[in-house]
Figure (tube, rainbow, N blue to C red):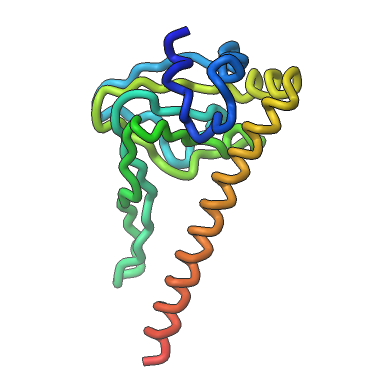
Length: 168
């Protein structure tokens, strides 16, 4: 299948050749998104992992602000823009958790082609091919560990800034 060549070099499949990546074919489908279309919405249920193979996306999160009159307002904050050159994947929490909700919104900036990896079929492929499944799970684990480390540093920066403001 033509889409497999697009997945070679994707961090999700690091250490796997085209033939081993092809084992995941039954768990995938290719999806097309027009420019400015919502691909994933924060707070919605989600079980599929998505791999961007063509186009550009923006990832944002809702920020809740407390106004002076004790009312709250919510605004979207863009955290990241990704293009297909790095073959990024997102939605990995949906593969690992039951009743997972999306933690961010992903919107297409251009026409996008995405490979969608179905949760149930993914686990079937991993069970039938444990060596390959193990490698993919290690790659997901590395991604999650890197994200956790980055977020811990962000919390430390925020806590430090907040404590300095309180000391004044």
